Length: 423
Ligand code: GLU
Image (cartoon, rainbow, N blue to C red; front, top):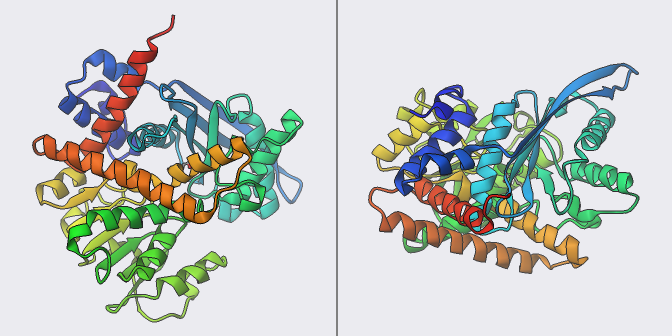
């Protein structure tokens, strides 16, 4: 095993990202020198910054912004607010962004940011203070031509509005293209909020084309935020039976399908599933991962399917809404059992794809209609999916994950070779 893999924690996202990279690199036959270039992080920015709290006291927070690889263009990736986020997590997520942008063909490199904070445990005003101070700290390294943040877990359009405003005020004029995932009224894109969930739907429709699409399929969705909640709603509207869903504390099962549209409207209004009175049996959230369904959509956190529970996972098809929800050992076990996995770097690329559209619109001061956004999203994701499937079929025993990484890595290498190493 290569030192880069051995040095990361066995159950960490970074371990998964590196192990996946080396598996694909073995298949491509990448030389050590190329592996060194592609596993190197271009820059790691780490900051400790004070925030004034509502009671007048100050608290110090840790924040990170990691640039993985910029060979294909400006850096792109979300900012995560979570009490559990570590620098290693941010590095893994940045590396996944590189392959994700490359596999869809977006002209971006991969980045990610994080602040160690539970956004639900502080007030709206404290959240704004924290966001503005963090943005001021990373202002030297972000910018519409350099590094364009976006929402991730724990952040949303409001947080992006504060980031855009803080960055813009530092420059003296409005710079809408510095972040994506903004409110539509501030130059955000139609369809961005739903884009990751909608991308999952488009990919499933493409994957199940010869099997009648998603209509009538039994589905389990793990996680009920911007990805899982929107996906569950859109899948229900497309005729699927969302038998299982869950937020952090509550799982719900209904054999005829939970009313995901009503449940998500309830959660979007700031409440939790525990207080929702819709029909269905209440179950443990993690039982959703073990549901006997046609399709499982892990859309919460990384590493929720590991060696500890993989034997109980029953779905024959898994589409990764979250980044890195399946640990590497579990991934091997599922593959050996013949489970099809549509991997994160392809499956959840809808979000960054519409972020790209938002960036293009912001730079042109244009506004696209939602239909145009969705049509272009479907086109890019469908093309990427077909290229991945074709690659997996050309090679022997090649999973969709390996094929996605292969295409992503190949494109980054091509860009690196064409540009050359300066000086
Ligand atoms: N945070 C999302 C992701 O993991 C979106 C990133 C973006 O839009 O830049 O893909």
